[in-house]
Image (cartoon, rainbow, N blue to C red):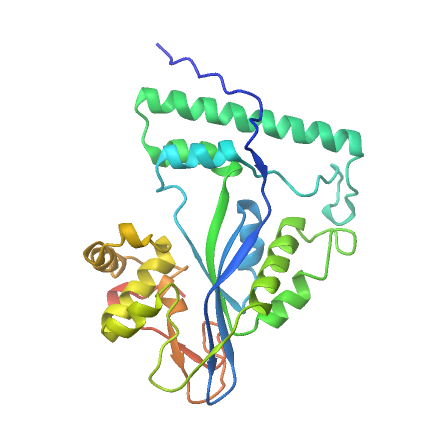
Length: 292
């Protein structure tokens, strides 16, 4: 007998309209070449992620959304209105799609929110049936914010192209990516870069006391793991857990390799095959090297 979906109330008081956000998790300048490498944690609309990945000058790692607990993702979907920032009308060509009339855009938003509430109800019902979280989370996926780790030594190029254009000036540009670019620009402008020389490392997510106490090899591994999973709270930090996850990573072939964010200054300001200028990425064991 099919489980009856639970009723989800209309948008409750603590629901917030989602907006992309960004914070710098490592900011380093090559002392020899002057090339600045900035790694940013970005939370954005999931469907704009593919457009960000098209930029050759950025390296991206997608932090796992489908592996999170269903309870976490249901709470995210309940508390956040992750809806489109712009409602284009349905036309033959995407390059000339004007926005919907205000009244129709409002109706479209109501339909989107209805779909979000039904997805939450269905997720609860699937939990009752015993469906695995990897399936349930796909149902919630369109209504969840996505967190990425993004590194680049050419942020100015990306930001100039993306934060200054809107759907009015270029209808092919996703409004959600423009908003993410603006958040990244603000975070980088407010960040202070640390100068590194040969033999020193750009290590996202490592805290000051960890940089001072951890051996180099452990520091590299922990930074790679956190670029994949996110940074744990001080209370939940478990060194052995992170070392175990690194061992699992070295048997995985991935395009969005989290090791790409851990870098050391290069002697010359040349562009690497990963699109980073003046920086050499951390090399993991051969079995772990990602697809190119």
